[in-house]
View (tube, rainbow, N blue to C red):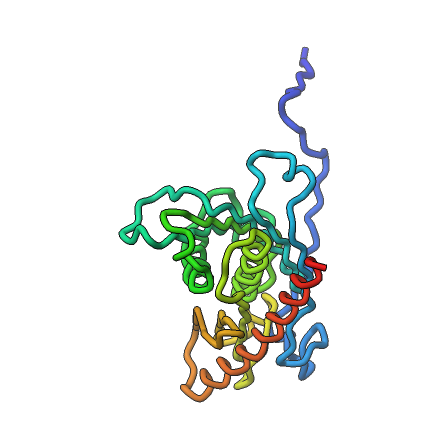
Length: 266
């Protein structure tokens, strides 16, 4: 005599399972038709959407951030919460200067290379990149012995270099929303090299088909580059061309951020 025992604490799977159908696109197809898959020009950045301000549920909480921002660029979706200035958690050798700390993480469903909630070494490395890129724009001398903390979450990623650039732009918008004193807002853009041509703001498929990538973070009003990162091998002439094109793209992204921030004040 067999007993039909059901474990109510476990979600039983279906009796019959079907293998999902994956839509695969060869990396070569990204530029097969002589152009880009989404019809953009080689130096064109994906459409940008920005939203600042806390949610209604956050505004009622005592732990609400000082400022927050949500940033979209094509399929990339990034959120950032800024806390501070508040009492610093770690001692600094220079008591007259504040500190800027950043925490970066991918949501487990945001990309194919992130599978768990455990923070990886890549996320820690990207957090240091964001600190080095954004810190020069903050007036840390105005906040002695204080700390400004930014927490960045990638909801959806479409291109590693482009996602880091979007995170920098999102932090800039969140810092302005928090009322942090800035020398200038930082705007970032990325490029990838494909068949001796530089392509702006590449998706993940386009990055996979490229041989080199370049990321530039810049303060356009101050005309100062705060961070530059390159993966791959290029000639000095190619690198100089990419930096100049990235600087122009940063100016366009900077204009979008400034127009939105000005609109929020009206």
